[in-house]
Length: 286
Image 1 (cartoon, rainbow, N blue to C red):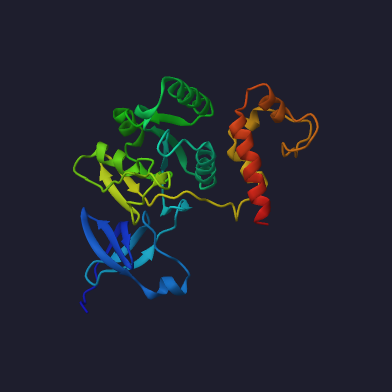
Image 2 (tube, one colour):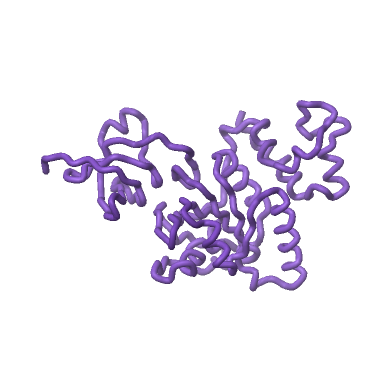
């Protein structure tokens, strides 16, 4: 083993198996984690700010995280860019709202990016534009994947995670933002009606003035450690309506202003329906 330990500060930008790639002083170091992390039940994550032994190639310490996503697993994220396919695979508002909840609960700013608009009929495109207006009114930034200049501006100087269902176009978007990346992409499986996994690990790429993580696609999230009160806060529009009962859960209570807003169209039916589904999922985990 080498001696003369030299400590440096850096950021973990890639993990493959038990090998951690750390960027420090504009150089990349392939490091191993010290055994103490296992004893402390701490797993180094992509995005972690750390201290490394430059000579012996060991991660010595992990700095305190400001946030952490469990799926995809990544730390210290500023923005989650939620890649949402409009077609092939079909638009899933259930998954979009679930991802939004996941991002809010992790204290990360969400940005919705709709993809594959070129596959839509005019009536379908109108529906997507209406959805864009609705989510924008909630204070969420919404973009189309064709608005590359706008995406770059929103992500400038940020650590970004791309998330969304498999086949939604995450790697394709990264390739369009930086043609030198040449990340692997695949077509949608016609037999399964969903995308094929192309990204096998979490990795941060430097694109312009931001760091973006392309992550393995997924189609399932759970609420095993979420309570109903936290879930309510994820549906920002609910706070616009003061119900008769302060602890109203917007389920079967009388004179619920939120349910009235759903009935007259001020709140999207899909949003409320997904809220009910998520409540049921939370209760099933208890």
